[in-house]
Length: 277
Image (cartoon, rainbow, N blue to C red; front, side, top):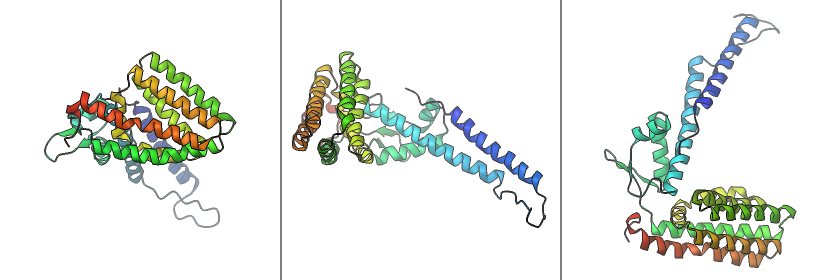
């Protein structure tokens, strides 16, 4: 997997810069220095050097965000495995960016518990924390139970159609044994519930805290596991369509409680991927 090309983005930024420069020249042609009176036109105060600084800052910030997203995806999908060594220079070369946004991305991923940055030593992909998985599940369940209760209380005409359409796509991905696609659709199912509840920002909070859990989920995405998830999703939809908040809550709790089973399974199957204790 590679990042989307950043060249068009940079071209867009430079187009903005040169447009601003042309505008400055237009100001200078319309007004003269020292001109007074109601017809006076003052040129903009920003200098080309200031504009370049702003453009550079925006570009590096956006690149850092893209690198964070790309590396996070590689870590969750086990393209980068726990214990793998990575370097700023290698990642910068792979994604075609400077080292500065990569350095910022490493810091952010370390804050999220996915990388271990060791001064003057190699940066490594952190092993999965069993305690982190349990805390991720606690945060997710606390928020998602309230989300599904709200949707079931007032499901709206579009809820059933949207959710069942996603379920159909999940079936296709499961039968094709397309783990990546199924994972994306699973995420979309839960994010759609948050949107239908009118609290899509709540999903962002969940997303920021469930990465350890996601690594475990991805390791267990076989056909049997995905079919079970689909059946559980179908139960959630049934409760929502029936406008039964209590049944929806019970279905969601049962669905998310699988995390403990999956954690025990992956620790047994891949002990080298987990932190000791």
